[in-house]
Length: 303
Ligand code: ASP
Ligand code: MG
Image 1 (cartoon, rainbow, N blue to C red):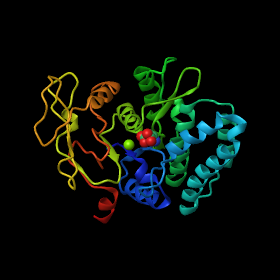
Image 2: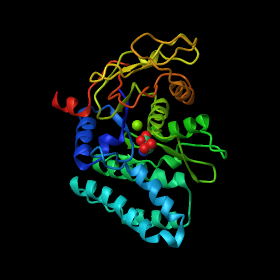
Image 3: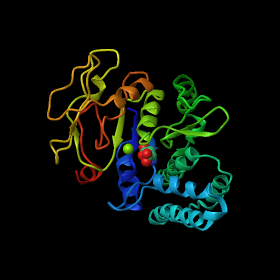
């Protein structure tokens, strides 16, 4: 049994959350490939690290005029990671990484690079915490020179790389173009990375975790861009009217309260070749096991 597990930013927002995630991963030997997002919000009025990075980079490109804000914002980002490292008692320093990031921001290296550091750094921490190998997504997730995801090349490189890799952490959300420059998927794109990795390793299951309760009411694996797929729907049990679904390929919508067409899922299935490993239709899913599951990280650990 081989599983790919992706954890959303809310599940990795603090050392406490990391510990829960570590326990989930260690609970099953089969959880061999881990895709982290960047740290998300710890409280409702907190800021996601990805948003902090976009903002910090915005200051960096203003140059000298905004130098103080740039430095302060970069320091605040560093502190988010350092508080996780301290909370996990890790012997790990990101000082060198932050020096490189600082230099690259000053060189105005690009917004995608800036945003991608959220997942990159979280991946380094996660790998150190789990004792898994760290694989930089820039080495295995390929975009072409126009910034379009190159599924064939990625599959070739990634499956070869993971074939003899027992356990690895691969940051979500980004890859690189042929010239080495970093390119991200659209926001929320770590879900896509997870499904790409699941395909590359022929995973038995792709689990997508976050810490908001909810459950799928249809099997997302039945969803197909070519066939008779029906719908992937998610019903948040604390909010029944917030049901999302998807029109099937013939354009029929699924019954249920307030079912909304969501073209994004079809697009994401096209990215992974339309076979298995769907990305979840909706960000509030917790774990996705062929549409059955459904616990948030606290519930799983309590059980
Ligand atoms: N961290 C990125 C974002 O905030 C990607 C992701 O979370 O999947 O959009
Ligand atoms: Mg997400």
